[in-house]
Structures are given as C-alpha cells and as structure tokens.
Amino acid sequence: MKSPHLLAACLILLSTQLTAATRTDISLQSLAGDAIPARLSVPDGPVPAGGHPACLLLHGSGGLLRENGPGLTCGPALESNYEAVFTLLESLNVIVLAPDSFGRHPLFCEDNDEDYFGWVPPPLHNPGDGVPARDNAYDTRRTLTRVLDAGAGLAYLQALPQVDPLRTCALGTSNGGTIVLGLAAIATGRHASQYADISQQRPLESASQFQERQQALANYPTLPPGIEASFNALPVLTFAQAISPGCFLRRFIPTADPDVVNVLDWPLDFFHPEHARDGYLATELHVEIGGDDDVPDHCRPDGIRHRQAVAHEQAFGIDPPMWRPVEYPGFGHDLLGDNPVILEHTRQLVLRHFFDPIFADGAE
Image (tube, rainbow, N blue to C red):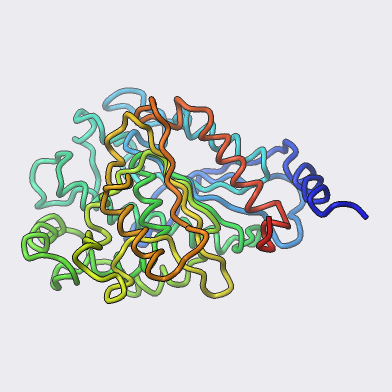
C-alpha cells in the first residue's frame, strides 16, 4: 500500500506546476464606501473541483505600484517585492488580489516621501484635516481605511466562483503587514465599527486616547451601515503572513495590558488570531521580523501584541499556538526583499495549507 505522505507529495507536485495566469486591473468597492483600484490574477485553464485557493496581498507604505517620480502617474508595473509575490503565487495556482489603497489618487504613489503628500486622497486625508502630514492622525485614518479596503478585498475573493473560500490567505509587508494583523485577528468587525465611531468611548480606551481618536477621525466620511456584520460574514483566513509589520496598529485593537486586565473578562479586546468558526479552521498567523528592525517591536516578547496573544492562548488553552512570530537576526525592515527565506516560507505555507490533504485533515 502506498504511503499517504507519498501520495500527498505527488498531489502537491501535480498541483503546483508552473502555469499561466491572467492579470486584470479591477475596481474594488471598499467597505469605506468608495471605489479603489486593485490588481487581480487568476490562473488560466479549467477551474479544479472546489475552486482555487486565493490570497489577499496588502502593500506597504511604499505603495503597490512602482513610482515614476513626484507628480507622475504611479505604475503600471508592480513594486519588485509584490511582483515577486505575484509570480510565486501564480506558479502555485493561487488567485491573487492586491487592493491599491493609495490608488485613490493616481499620483499618490507612497506615503514615506513628503513629496507625495500633495496628492493624498480622502479618506486618508479629508477637508478640515489641516496640512497633510505623516503624523499619528494620518496613521489612524490610514489604519481604519486600509482595514476596510482589506475586508472588501476578502469579500471580493469570497464572491468569485473560482475561489475555494476554505482556502484563503493574506500576506502583507510593512504597513500591509500591519493590516494583515488587523484582518487576521478576532473581532475585526467589532474593532472597525468601534474605532470609526467617535461618538462613543471604546472599552479599555482612556479619555486621552478617545480624544486623540476623535480628533484624527473628525472629518472621516460616515461609513456604510453594517460594517461589523460585513466582516463577520468573511471567511476565516487559513493562514496569514505579516512581514515587518507595525504591531501597535494605532490602537485599532485595544492595548490592554494582560498583567493588569484579565483576558477572560475582555476576550474580544485582546489581540489574537481568529478562532475557528462557521466550518472554518482557526487562522495560523506567521509574523516575520528582521532583527535590526524596530518597527515590529510590539510583536516581540516584551511587546503588547505578543503579550496579549500569549495571554489569550494560555487563558483559552489554544494548542498548538496560532500566534507564530519569528525573528531573523541581521535583517532590517525590507525583510521580504532582502531575505529569500521569506518567500520560501510563503511557498511552504501555501503547499502545506492548500495542497497537502494530510495537513488539511489535521494530521502531520
């Protein structure tokens, strides 16, 4: 009798041969209420029984498209890191969708360079918000906007007839990794709804934090109704990969200290990957951190997100852990571009979660 592990290896090989894919620029209706551009890649040829796996790719502060200089239209080529991710996932027969949150204005290519802030569009910066700047208020609006964009992206994939909603992932780098943390966490819809509502102080939010949020979102557009329900209807990600993320998340998820606040009293207000529900398995969240990068500090052992996730897993007896941070000594913030191990890890995650029937059945 043939070994089931050998059979799985053969199926993986057959499922991951290089294939062609068609890329299309589409318009995506954000949960923020406006339309944004996005790039979609779908494998050519017949759709397998059950559909293709799909992955949401979230860009960082440098933007999704290559810049051609301030005042010039962005793109059309992808930034090199995202081209590499697209190429890898296409070779594995994975549908890819990359929302372009900065593409709300054709000249707003990135937000690392102040020269581009003359074109920063709503709702990232709105009339009445003052002089455009990369400050905490902008970061607050960007966090909310990009989580809403990501939720819309996942909903779009869920609705595609070629997609298997039981096999979805999200991958992001830098600020895109930050948004992956928010999207992959428990109670994302609850957090988005509460974060946007500046008429109410949130649970575990101090008066000064509430005031800061009110000021940042004072001119933010009113969101469409049913934001929490929209997120709750999304598939649970099979796995997520946050590369070089800013883990503070501008308090999109409360920053309750597990040494002070009991997680059992506030289970939805502690950061942790989403639990199993509605026939979906829990999200396995991989966080990739460069040893010389201080941006992901809150995901390190003494950081608030790491401590919240560990406290949550201990309180609820989650084993094996779904929170899986890894640090790579000697690497900086561009971990995806500088360390080939990261893309190889992506490839292994896709094979293990999407194409290995033994792993999918819960046995290794």
